[in-house]
Image 1 (tube, protein in one colour):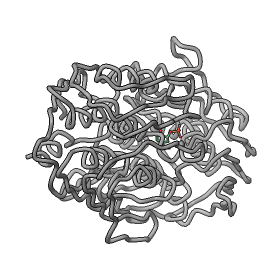
Image 2 (image 1 turned 180 degrees about the horizontal axis):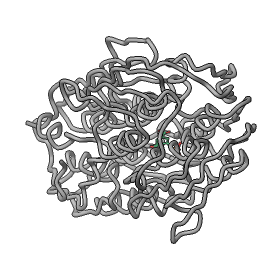
Image 3 (image 1 turned 180 degrees about the vertical axis):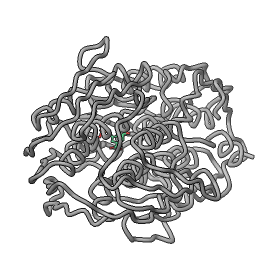
Length: 435
Ligand code: S3P
């Protein structure tokens, strides 16, 4: 369990050691949902036991899926409902997780019972219209009951849906997946076109379970033919590259560092953080790559000679959307300017990450300009520690604790318990790598 207030200071000896970051958050949500609808039992290894993913797993248990504990909390047997889930006896708590709520809305809309999903204040202020629109076009009955228009809680009256072709207005894997999951339970062909490549874990898992799904050569068009029936399949979830990203940046900026992160997911729709850090001059080596299903491997990072600013390309944004706060920290230590534009989606994450990243960079003395769709950082000058809010956003907390490892004085982040939503054990890893 993460502390509420965490302080870092200059890591004078560098970062050293080998760690295994927890399982991938995006894949864990999807494994819980797809496993819960499968026929039979599957062994799940390295599930992310963070609050977000445990909420999704508990929701699936409410639908009748069974979890039999294994040798550690991350490993368990998941027994599915063979496409015949039960109505949940009580409202479903999605906690802080937009992914959990949006993906589950896709299946709840198409199942023959009513459900209600709620979340914490951050989740209840995030847009749900983006999934309500396409699901309503399929015939779904979803009411956004939140104080803010178009926001959670969601009241869903499940019913038989009709297939659609949907042109995604934004590059969102969550919206794409909500539609495809609804399509999986709907007779006929449901298809989506996305304006840019987004993470393809749903498609990869369809493949893992033998669920027929077609993806166009350019990866932008995906179609599924429902309804499907499939058998459970054992799975081992790789480490989360979004969690690894904090250490990739920390070891790059802190002198005398060398760390290895084991068995990190290297899905090409998620690895732009490595491409961009290398372009900035980071010393990153990848080894022991395995390529079945979701690719993964070991990543070794040594202190960079000198990072240099870069321009993040439009198509790279969806691929590193969750890593932007920590990438902005790297940019503050890089010579020259780093431009991160076409990233308005940052405004509707767990916090408005353009505002929260800019506020905290400025608090540490960085030179940053903000725009409606992003930020431009002019780096190179030393940063100083500060007392900063995490704005109840796990990635803001961890990103600025990394900045503190190479800043003057003490860097204190307030309201850090949200780190548990994605990275249980973060503080232990921090202590281990700087000791
Ligand atoms: C996710 C997709 C991304 C990402 C989120 C997880 C997913 O959101 O920011 O943390 O698992 O599909 P969008 O697809 O809405 O951009």
